[in-house]
Image (cartoon, rainbow, N blue to C red; front, side, top):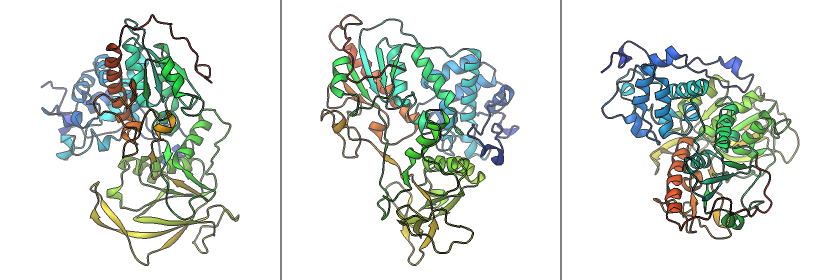
Length: 503
């Protein structure tokens, strides 16, 4: 074993410098810096180089983590990037937003964490490898060696769609990406706040795909101004990667009051303003008492965005305790540092437009009828585990309380839009309310129509969406190779009905 590795005994775990909370809440810039080269090399040298690398096993992409850690420790950065890029289309993105504490850096994935030495900082090193590659000019578009004459239309330009597009273009196919928004990225561009990942990071990757010859059509929404029938005429294969954007209902009295909004509506509003698509956020928390309902990473994003917009106060109502929260422990810590509050084991029961009569130090900021002003909730105790293994919350009798709220954000999760409606019945939904497809081929009931990402899995992580994109691209490539010989490239020139100019 080289002397450069296994330094975990003498070197403690360290993360890149993080801006102070009082500074970072004043803007939307990323809160964490990149490692300096010597810092990344030192932290990478802590890797134990396990014979069975569970960090790689628990990574959805099965990244070659021990190998590129070793290369980083030895200063072989270009080789480290080539290895990282071989399994991950967007390593600089995953390095920033993956919940590593639940995947490769979890106590069940990193031997050092189990032994009490502190996990290797895998995510921060992955980001450093990719940022070094961008700075050195090693990141180049993947141009096809030959053209097949086949055309693929991908609906949804999020992580699954972008990953599939890059793989299919490298295989020689003509690729068109269609998305409801004006930019590539999907939730990476519009649903992930800039304090976690600045949009220049996604825009840089989008330019790379365009440079490879992938054509992007912004402002195109399937079932609205994008026709499934036209897509079938224009392309030899279609990939549905439109994600999961439909908010789950709270199923509470009063949820249709003004001021009760879905989490994605709120995050998209903020993102569009920050990237200049709108002059100001359409939904602004400035001066308001904000209550966020939910306990995932999206809930944390909403809380931290509200703090930056100048909310009078931000509270998260979550019906379980901290240990059973589905969101990243790291993100919970960031939210607390920035002044957000958590009401653990608190279950909302109703929303009301009647003000809270007495809440110390909380004056009401709205006095109009028809807008939410109060969330009624109760305390819970944790009972027997449910199907997910987490303890089931049970209301505590007589524990009701009220919280003042001008803005209530529903962060309970999202569902997949009905593919049958979007495809004129050609594609169906599964009993789990996801787009139905063969598990192996990813093909739906419609020949040549595939599905990937959240549309197939339900709401999931970016890293899983990238894996889905890579897998569906391989399946589509096999399907196209089995078709009769293609017509000469450029033969299909029928324009799409209502298509906007490509961005």
